[in-house]
Every structure is written in structure tokens, then in C-alpha cells.
Length: 159
Image 1 (spheres, rainbow, N blue to C red):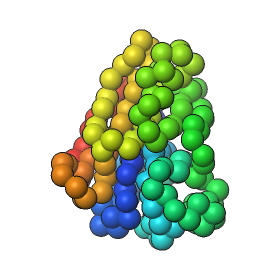
Image 2: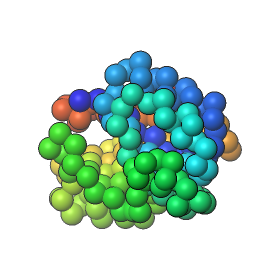
Image 3: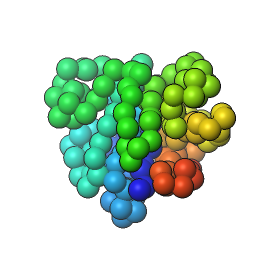
Image 4: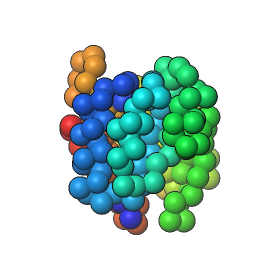
């Protein structure tokens, strides 16, 4: 099962459109957003995803009630725990807890965002992924991650 991992889209509608196109072309089953969508109107484009969607609020997300409504209840407070294909996953925005969550041994996958820097590594038997920032703001590349959940192999893709 292929899942897409994104973060820090920061209202960049062009980048979000490209993400939707990539995810749909790759046949991604589930897209996970690690926070900082910013505005509810982003779901005008994210609504084009052919995959399931789960996200969390980041530190810059403003109108949380409307984000919740526009996402059809698929945006959650952090940490958000879920299971996909038997894998225990936890999603946070800030990196502060990522290492400790991985060390707990409770999760197969820890996803975080916020730093705008891609990070794929293992802590014991737990994989940690930060897909980097999808938005084309600030310095650095705009990136997302794809994860083959059955093999636990991740790839960072530049937009």
C-alpha cells in the first residue's frame, strides 16, 4: 500500500494542485498531512484527491472549525494516532516529540512536519518521516514523501 505524506502546504495552491496530481497518478491510497494547511479553501483543491485523507492542525492553522468542516472531519488535534494496514501511526506537527514517540516502541511510523526539512530515519523498529515543506515559500526545496507501507520504504520527492 502506497501512502503520501505531506506537510506545511501554507496555502500554496499551485503546490497543492501538483501534490493532488502526483498522488492520483501514483495511485496513493491514503494521504497524511502533518499540519500547516492554513486556510479552509485549500480543500477546494485537496478535494480532488482520489485517496483517503487524514491531517492534523499545525501551529499556523487559523480557522480550525472551518478546516474541520471543509475536511469533512478529517483534520485532528495532535498527536493523532491511527492504524493503516496493521501499522500503528502517530502524527505530530512539531518535531519535539517525534524521537520520544519513536523510542516508545508503540508505533511503526512517526510523522512530523514544521521544520520544513525532509527527514527519513529509523529509531529502533520505528520509522520517522518528515516530508519537508510542500509550499514554495522561504528557502529550500519543496518536497513530499511517498511510503510503501508494506515494505516500509520511503522516498522524498521534489515538487
